[in-house]
Image (cartoon, rainbow, N blue to C red):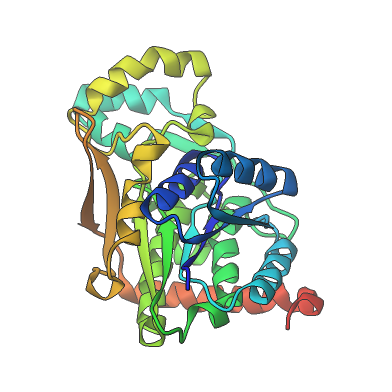
Amino acid sequence: MERVVLVTGASGGVGLALCQRLLEEDGRIHLCIACRNVQKSEATRDLILATHPAAQVSTVEVDLGSLASILRAARELRCRFQRLDFVYLNAGIMPNPHVNFKALWHGLLTGKVLHMLTTAEGIMTQTDRLNGDGLQEVFATNLFGHFILVRQLQSLLCGNEKPSRLIWTSSSNARESAFSLSDYQHAKGQESYSSSKYATDLTSVVLNRKFNTQGLYSSVVCPGLVMSNMTYRILPVFLWKLLMPIMWLIRFFAKTYTLTPYNGAEAHVWLFKQKPEYLDSLAKYHSCTSGLGKCYVEPRKMDVDEDTAEKFYQKLLELEEQTLEKYRDLLD
């Protein structure tokens, strides 16, 4: 039987490049693309079929920032499939990003600018807001929505003949300093994106501990710095065009400057070909590109505390119970 692969955030950037690259690796897979609305889903499907006309591509509508949408999508997927082999948890948002040029200038003077440019540490903030479910929007979309989706699809992911895989898109911007157990939704801070990605790393670690024995394995990837719609919102487009020659030069010193969505999907595709039993559950797999354009994958140990991860997982379970109470009609 063909493998079933679900990809969230598939309408553009790394998600779209990933879909195309997966079909290049194995044209027999059943690819299910998850997008926020029907129009995006159908347009993405048509785009993929234009280059892979024989591919099996289906769509599902899901807004990861809406619990009702997630529950409806999960119910539809449970009716449609008997199992899921891969779930790429790739959708994400970074609303209202702001660059701290003063901090960037200070980094230039102190010799820390390369580190700042590769991790965005200290130079990027976001303005977050509450969503319709009363949750912080970035936390809900980047992590909690995916967590609920996984929980609702557990029957398709666990106990299968072959292992199933969760592959989360994290970031080099995932930093412990931006995360707090007492404010895990990051309502009081200005680095909601970084916090949500660190929370992603913590979640993946615990999922392995809880579900490896049931045949479910979780991995975390970093696509590097990719020029996508999310990136272009950080600075005006004309400024990015001026900076691009410099960024290509920086790639000789910063291998995580993958720049294109195709290169950014390198680690995602590499994991597709690996046996999960031999992977390091405490490693983040980074897409890298050499100065001459060669793509490769580099595993790096994540800076996560397993005790903190366990405590955070329990908080997610408590939040799940609280928030799903009003959606009983959508629960089986």
